[in-house]
Length: 132
Picture 1: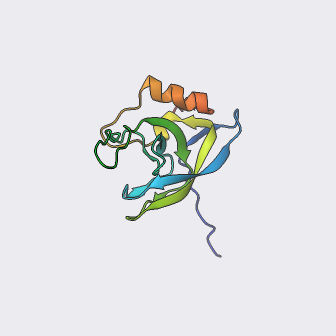
Picture 2: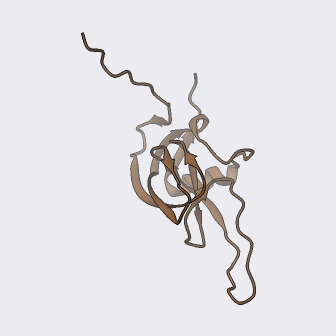
């Protein structure tokens, strides 16, 4: 008898109280392989979005001036994504839904703040802690 595929659940989605919707989001390259459930911060520079907790770029002066970057928690990555090494990558991200905060990933050594959670909530992403 042939074995059926075994499924494992990552507990990313807390419940269906809020509808899940997804959008295509441009990610900056060079961030490695990002796991499902990574919190993505929207960049004000429009050059690709990054993992929450990434240090924002400082303003650049001189011949090619550029304003300082602001980063704001905005989406949750739907699937593991390799960001490659050149240019940008397009990935599916949840823009709304109810998620388990303990299943989320941010930049190493960064801890999500109340302001980050408020930014997500204002965007339509709600967080709760699932009991094990």
